[in-house]
Structure formats: structure tokens, C-alpha cells
Image 1 (cartoon, one colour):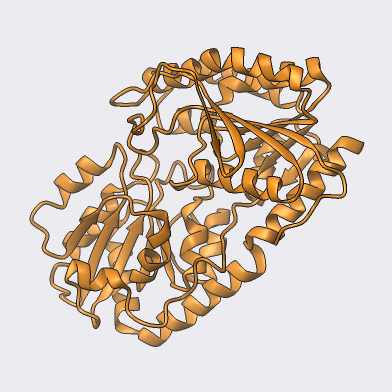
Image 2: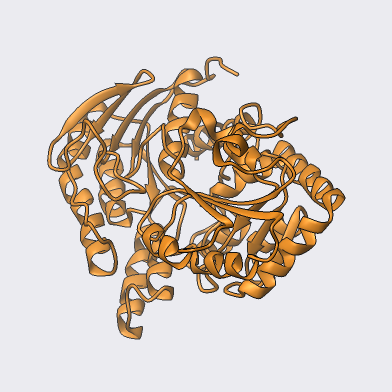
Length: 415
């Protein structure tokens, strides 16, 4: 779907991650930029060099160098940042602050371009004050998109501690958010959180993660990965595919696999990279029913997701209502059921319950029991997979989501 917008805009995208070939927020931001350009808008990007999820700057880039490139016709300015080898706590804060500091000269330079909208994505909340100030100085609308409530999560996960510190930091966050012209986020529950932070309803926008439902479709035959991994066509594959970080609660996967070793027909594949992979690998040592894969090429995403008979979506109990995992969209589009760990009443649980099974977080026995149930009932798997695909088609289609976002952006300029 291409075409020209009725009112072409100059849009500056400002955020930590911009990596078309990867997954997560960097991929979403790149797809959004390319879609906007295809619809007649002039788009520029300020971002860090690609480093996520490996926490290592990618080949061809330097952590401490300003670089410019053009990707899919879109000018991208890469600015320096510090990438810690083992992120966590104060190191992660210093990492985010380094990008905000070193990207400031590039942001200031683009004020003279006079964009209509400066759109920034959080995480990287340190950039928010500069985004708002730059927008005010050049007459642009300031738009912040919240993919993850990073401050709430940092305290809930124990990365930051102290009641007094939390009160001060959340007060500053509230003050900054209230100054943006638009605040968008990816789920209704996260919008509710924004309202609790004092954001007026007329400035809130639901901007869901999306999926290319034409590019990711239910496979009609066995995935090519089965032969490559030596997995029989008759086996039931439970797949986790995504970042292996601190908020996923990955330790439950290892214990679930250990509880399943007597079920030869159930095989586990854990695909991805990140700071949590080494520990997950250690916990799975000696388990013949577990295989590991590195992050796979984007062009093989459909085959990878189609490898699953069941998708695994673990979340830590204290993070389950702060995030709507971006990996869920591909799972649903693949037409396979999802087994998720989530608190009942969270939006994640409500979505997954219609097309899979929800169990309490950090309960490997419950997760194993859900997998055993689906392993034994192929008809149940097919039924839930059909529901998953139907939800993706009706709610998560990329063109539908981005057309609505474009309309919201144009409307914001008239407000």
C-alpha cells in the first residue's frame, strides 16, 4: 500500500534503536519510517548505532563516532553512546544518559530543518526533555511514544530502589510527559497508566505494535527448521523466539523443559540473543529436549515462527502489566497458539486467553501442564491457532495501524 498523504509532513524520528534487520522497537521504528516515506512524508532519523540485543555495536559502526547513512531512502544520523558489557542498574542509566548527551548536538542541528513533528520513542526517557525543548524552539509538535514504562519497570524489577527516589523520579517523569502534545503507547492498560500519570485524554493515542500479515502467514507444511535442527515432523515444538533479557523471566523455560524430559514428543527451541542467554543455556545444560538458535535473518522469520506448534511467552510477575511484548504480534500472525505467563486481569492475559493458555508467572509446573495439554490435543492447537491468526488480521495489520497513526499525527497539527 503506497500513495501520497493529503498533507505531506516533515517528521524527525528520535530514539535509541533503529535497526530494520532486527526485531523489537528498532524494527518497528524503521518500518514506520519507511511507511511514512512511502506515503509522501519527508522523514529523518536520529538514533544510536545498532547494538541491541547483543549489547555490542554492530559491524560497520563505532560506539564513539558520529555517522550518517541512508537506509531505504531515509537519512539516518548515528550518534555516540556507551554500551556496557553487562547492563544493569546504574550502568543501564549511564548508557541511556550517554545517548541523550551525545545526540543533543545532532538534535540541535535538525531544529534548523524545522520539522512539523518530532517523534521520540521510549525507552530512552533521558531524551524526553530535549525532545520537548527542541520542538518548542522550532515550532514542531512534540510526540512521545511509550513502548515500555522504563522508570516503573526499573523500580519494580529492583534495578532502582528507594521510596523517596521513586517519588522524585516519577514526579519528574510526570511533569515532562504532561508537556508533550501527544503521548502514545501500545495497549489500553498502558494508556490507563498514562492517565494515572496525569496525561489528559485528548492527548493520548493508542498506537499498537503491528505485524506484516502478508509476510508472516501460517505454514501449510513443515518448517525448514525442523530438518535443520533434526526435529521429527511428528514432534510438538514449543518455541521461544525473542530477546533474552531481564524482563522475560527466562528461568521458567529451563525448569519447564526439565519437567518435560519424559515427554519425548515435546521439543523446545529457544531462539535469540541477549544478556540472559548464557544463564538460560547453563540452566538447560544436559537437556536433550532443548535446542538453541541465534537470532535468525529477518527473511526467515516466517519459517522460524512456523516451526512452533506452540509459542512460549514468559513474563516476570512484576513486569507483566508494564509491557505488551512486541514479539506477540508475530506469534499471532503465524497462526499458532500461545502459552503465556501473566497475571490474570492484565491486558496480555486477556489477549492470550482468546488464542492460547495463560498461567501464573514463575510457575514452571503450570507452564509444563499447559504444554502437555496442547501436546495431547492437536485439534485444540488448530482451533487456538485459527483464533490467533484472526486476531492478527483484524487488529494488528500494519497498514491499518499505520494509517490510523498517520491520521492521528495530522490531527495533532490542527489541535
